[in-house]
Image 1 (cartoon, rainbow, N blue to C red):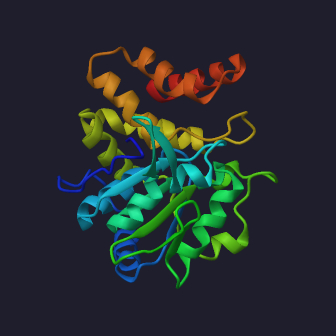
Image 2 (cartoon, one colour):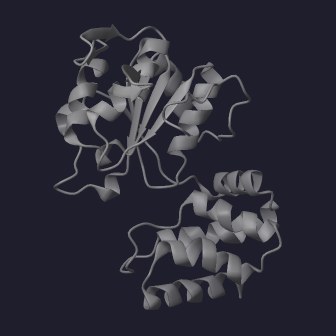
Image 3 (cartoon, one colour):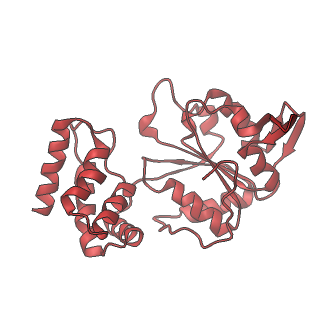
Length: 268
């Protein structure tokens, strides 16, 4: 989604299957104006969860994919030349505050350090956003909620969420769902029948349980949906799994072969 255009929540909520009490916690945090931090591996459903909850609560959603070059100005806004005149243009965070929307910062740990400084006043009792360039101090209205996510497995000494920032958020840890739930989710999203999805989920569990293999992460639920979608569209199983499981997980020929051997053990 374009960060400057809210994903309006006047539609059917995107499919999401709860695994615990995360929906109730999100609703309570939203009602109290509390920020929320989602922790978990890539492709386990964090973004879909936020999209689902925004639609369920009927709130506009601004999603920002954080990266190394994302600065505070990208979130707050800047002056731009339009038609020969200088005009202030709000960034996605400012728009969310003005509208009482939900602002979701995906992989917030990837953003520049000045971003967290801007977020701090929004994550305590002040709930304010200072726009230095215009001299405005915005107070977040009811309905505004700040949600951020990150993958703890990718933290290192240079990119680590400070305790002073983490302790400003409520937190939920996401993991991959249990096999029965994952089968239901993949079947629902891909259109492949559950009986044919079950071996995919079993394969994913085996890959995630591997130790000593040069994999940064196990196969995500998202990749399983991709694989199942290809199979449902008529692609041969071997080709679908090569494209949606083996290739995305590794560039190492020996690791790729080990994954193919594991696939063969599951499918015979």
